[in-house]
Length: 172
Image (cartoon, rainbow, N blue to C red; front, side):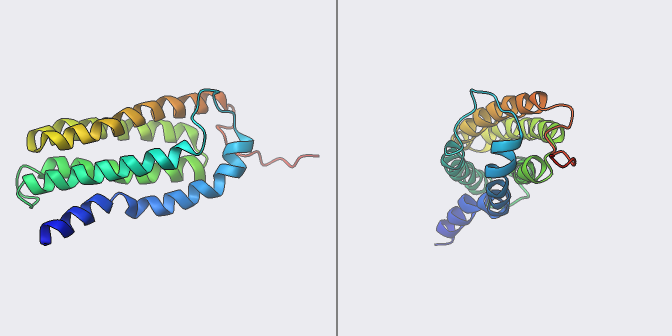
């Protein structure tokens, strides 16, 4: 029974920080994101994001469980580095919404997502030595964040000079 609870907890772990980030995102999606900044025509519709993230959070959470389980259910063995990288990318994942949507800092959001991308790629690589399936489960996440890097970069570059921040000037 303990294994079942471990699987459930670790599979749902990515949602822990995503709820707060999701509320920030929802707050600014209809205002700042939809109205104040330019976006490329090829960006997915807003509805696509929660659908994709639901799938990705489930698969990455389950991948972390597989690594924990096959790494000896401890952080002292072969799962230590992969799960440390997983935790780092998860914190970076949660932070991105605040940087992009709350602080409207498109440049920092781009640099942060690049670090997150490298960390996810490191997870894919290190997961493979513990559980190959876990590595494969992380690949759609890596692909989506690769796309998100391009989207973040494009939005940042489309919105100079105030970097996507709302102007302090009042409209006349």
